[in-house]
Image 1 (cartoon, helix red, strand yellow):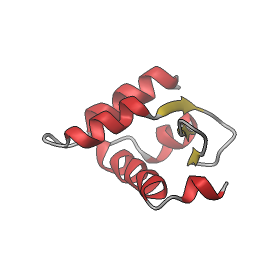
Image 2 (cartoon, rainbow, N blue to C red):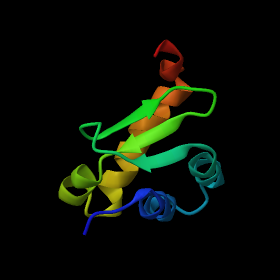
Image 3 (tube, rainbow, N blue to C red):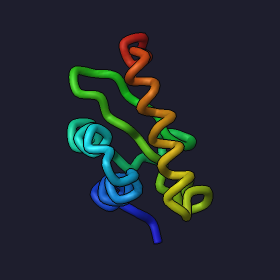
Length: 87
């Protein structure tokens, strides 16, 4: 079953460990879009960053929440380190 952007956003919010209010807010602030234009996931820099996530990658490699959480955290660190400003 392929996921759309809203389903991906909900799944990401649900996989965040309890007590991580900051990350839940992050998911609300950053646009999350299902996109086959990226191989796995990417942060697209702009005034409001967007996280692009390939639903096929999620279906194949992130069936459990733990791998999805790690993928999201990896992309979060790109934002925290200012990498989108380099785009």
